[in-house]
Length: 449
Figure 1 (cartoon, rainbow, N blue to C red):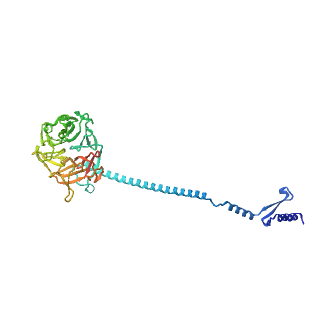
Figure 2: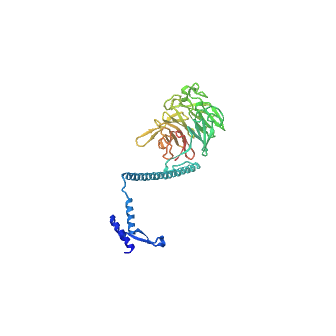
Figure 3: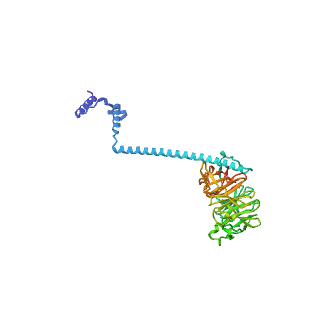
């Protein structure tokens, strides 16, 4: 037996002795020549490819272990957190889309409002630049309300032949003028006083009535100074007037006590002859161009009574307007909630209905004035203000109801069926545009109809 065979047989026997059985096919004998390994007889037993593959498979199998409860809980926590994050992201996405929708909606709404205002301004500019009388023209023949000027408390207004509007601002002790769309100070420093002189230096004490004659001279009732002021050619001067029973002392309330307010000049009108009609709380006097004056109606006693001259009674006269022929004077009687008409020639005082102007609301229902304040006559239409009713009421000269502007609710909305907030004064220009002093909103409003 050759030496190599003897060694192999001996190796097999030794394996049998140790109880190890090694399959020959699992290993192969690797012999290297002396030229490669430097040894004449060197051998190495290596595993076969099949054994290596099985070993790798067993190794991979040993790496997987069943997760513990702690690992399961941690995994569930991570999944729940991911789900919560996803829900939050979905909610944020929904809110973002909702905000984007309302943003677009607001943009569209503002665009529509802008177009409406632009159209209304265009209508105003067109009619303000034309002559004649406006007939029902605008959007479905509905009155359209616009805010013209803000920040002004127009307790009384007057308008001249050119269309300039004079505004008595009792709260600032000034007279403003609105001409060609621009508002500026016409007279008064804003200080509470009684100084005559250049209009820019003059002082008033609660101016609450204003009128302008055909020559452009402006007259103002200066309530707390108990007088009438004249503004002509840029100069302010004083016209002394006496109320009933000579209780009015020019220059202040001295000697008049609490009753002074009932005899203080509250409103004023002027006719084409230049005669002034000065309304005190309970009576009306006429002041002639030569400075003489006389009592037209009322007797200084508060009450409600029609009749001739001094037999009539009033209760807080707030505004007056005279017709173009100087035949009738129309008076708003505030606390009596009635519009009175005075025949200037005969001094006869008449309420145009038994208990004042009646507004028919259809059927048998009727409502009276809440609190009548401003009045203005143009052609054969009498424009009157119902302050507490937040409306402008239109009547013919005999007291027949014609129309109403405003929805009757306190507000400041423009447009069709808009609203007023305690209006008190009114004038109408030659084109028929109606201007309203809205003191609750500190605005000058305009109605196109």
